[in-house]
Length: 354
Ligand code: 2U9
Image 1 (cartoon, protein in one colour):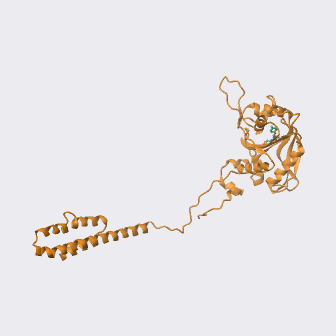
Image 2: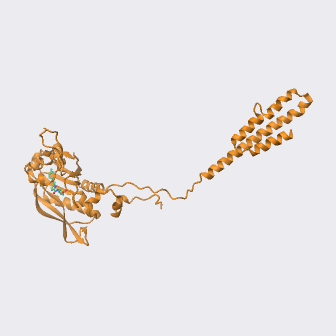
Image 3: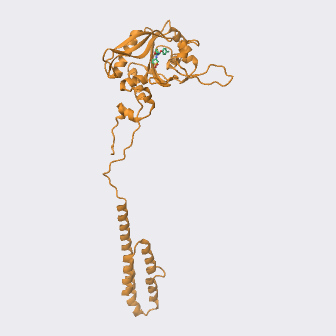
């Protein structure tokens, strides 16, 4: 009995894993296990023999069961220990650096401009980028023969062969938005129309798609004086410093009189600074809306009058943030955005992993 006990306890102690342990359990205590067979022999013993062997075998069975359970727990602990050692984690490592997306500077400037005009009571109007030639030209006092049509380097859409209607155009300015706005709502009007416009032109200062914001204020007695105040208010808010303006007589088909507007600036070492110095920089066109234009939009020019202006957003973004080449906007490269220090890029880094 002692040999039997010592043999099983030793093998259990040496079991390498749970599978080996299970094999031992079956070999000792399973239906045909060594200890089970010995217990079956009890029936064939004399009562005296059984009185000795019975309790001894039961004790052995209990002892082997306990040894199996203890070894199983020990193997489980060892496996967990090994796993924990393998899955070791250094929680002091810096996090992985993730680059964040940012607002494009043109969108940022568009929002800044919109907010400034909103403070002065202007609503935002939007409209289609593919326009009829009526809304893009005729309604703006630019008839078919007018040289401005050719000058604007217009993109035309195709018509099906045999369809002789005039083609649609990619809008060359956002002015059609304001024609549509007046048709729908009548006067008085205070709106700005920011958005994409298209002209077939590409060099350091022109891209085939660019962004404009136009403004329109129509009421019974609006004058150029109101225009000057609104624009100076705008430039001062936008550049964060008081900015003088200079109005030069000009000509546009849709305004009469018309003026090109310059802002005060200085040129030093090839960089332009707005709001100081004695130089002037042209930034927008403007004027009193031509009576033909008001009439085309269903507004009576004998009752209503007002100003309009238009400026390139890309250009004023370049001026505020010192971007030398318009094509930079199309590089989609965060490096130059960082270089020019756009506020939208100054997001706090959670982990600046090195
Ligand atoms: C309506 C009536 C008149 C908008 C105007 C300009 C002058 C102008 C240019 C500035 C730079 C276009 O982006 S740019 O190339 N714009 O010079 N725009 S007056 O006149 C309007 C608009 C809407 C109904």
